[in-house]
Length: 372
Image 1 (tube, rainbow, N blue to C red):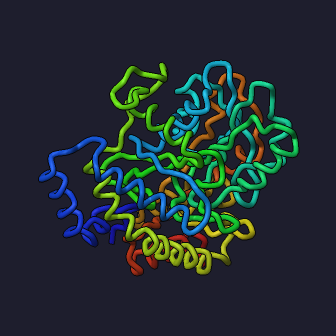
Image 2 (image 1 turned 180 degrees about the vertical axis):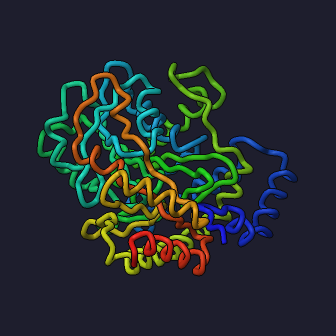
């Protein structure tokens, strides 16, 4: 039996009738950009993120990458500025920073959580630092509150926190949904994400009305009410009506899908826990919303042999991510924890459509590789 890493069609079939109806309503309505479907989705996503506490607004955009870029542009960040983030993340985190003209400055990660290490923050701050972008990697919440507190303690209230929550919709930390703690939160609706579109899409969560309005203008040429552009570096980055309608339907299943994946991660941890492998640690008072299940093995050689073994057994495993982003940068810094982890990780099949017998096949293959 072939076990795919993702089978997105299965989740579509779970909601096929609702999706067809939503698409049909958009086609019948004849409005395809910046219309009622987008406003409805922004409202419903905002309510889901905030719950009964806090304030803020959601602004839909073209992608998770643009969500980060729009947040940085709304802060006035550009050439000559520095933005602190992690190297162990998807390429779009860094490319979004570069796209506005800023320079990514990379911090190392913690050995257990594989997330931004706040202890490294002070040494990385300079007079050019304008923002910190912690990444909720694989759906595991980063220590955003601690990062914000550290910035305040150091007297750097001029440095904004922009959360990269592309992989973590539905996760929470200390009772707050990820993406709502910093000044901005960036979400992705790439098809494989926790709430996936049938195409591309993203959203910015802004904690203030003024910030949300600035992002709305920046996503639409810098215009307000079809007037002259007020932001010379604005983008054309809009979440279209078809994807907004589909995402409104899919939003209703995110909690269920996240719960399924949580059970799968727990099964992997339980049934592989006696092997020489390691999984991400979750910090106290954090509730992850797993996007990927990533496993660390003893060495790069073991990882590569295990990948080949799984492939022979019909199991599609992947690597997230093959190379740290800082290694491609001129004058690359040294990040020992990141560099040690990167060659030793692989991602096991884990998605809301994965069947129990398929997961059993993955577990059996990994165990046989280790002679168990």
